[in-house]
Image (cartoon, rainbow, N blue to C red; front, side, top):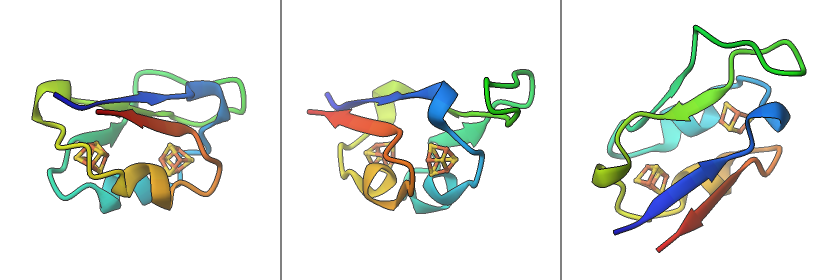
Length: 68
Ligand code: SF4
Ligand code: SF4
């Protein structure tokens, strides 16, 4: 099973990863504000991740790592 890690405090809430995920597994966490003042991205269902790395490739700030 694949999994991703998001560096929340580096995230600028641009939603590139949200739109890149073919399984629609990433969303912005509206309940949280990170060190930069943005709602950070969060994973919604790790068990559904296929490890395609689209999210990590799209992130302009290299906040996401994928393990598979
Ligand atoms: S690796 Fe692929 S399936 Fe997993 S969260 Fe990223 S874009 Fe979605
Ligand atoms: S693409 Fe990167 S910076 Fe943009 S919301 Fe996703 S994790 Fe945050």
